[in-house]
Length: 114
Length: 114
Image (tube, rainbow over all chains, first blue to last red; front, side, top):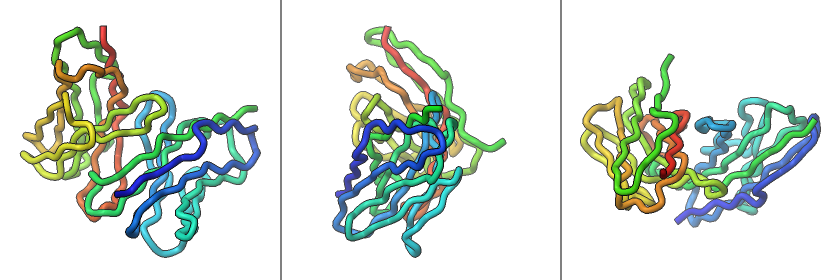
């Protein structure tokens, strides 16, 4: 079975500063990894995903993530955040088969301050 | 515009009452999902369906029921057996594949107990 841990429940940061949201996973088989973002009172939308190939994945809104198999991590980064990036971010993992097997982390609330 | 529509946005349940949450999609997706979101707990899968007239239990199906009579619709009933129904409910859809598919989410229904 797979599991995913988001190490920080809240991350406050000042506007234009860099940010890293941490995600570690556990699995005995190869996995697919995802980052989703949720703005207040809304559904989630996909930021980026890793299926295979290059370990550095670029997503929407200037975000990127790096898959590190040896450290079982998939940390999300942005070099300079904006107020509009304030949201909750969810890491998710699946070993495949169907999206019914997707496991979500508990989320990290990113708060960008002026 | 293609997308997923959830209704109502807010719903209140009285003791002993069953309530039904609506989810409709016009993305022509075969797979649909219901998630429950509690603060600080991430998303947990209630039920999912990959084809009309078939559905599978997720991790927390007790106290819930679903139907999938049409490809476009996947309503969720919260029964009186669900003793702690207050939560944010999210519906999602995707194409059917091997697990690397993007989920498209509705904007959610907040259910509260009177």
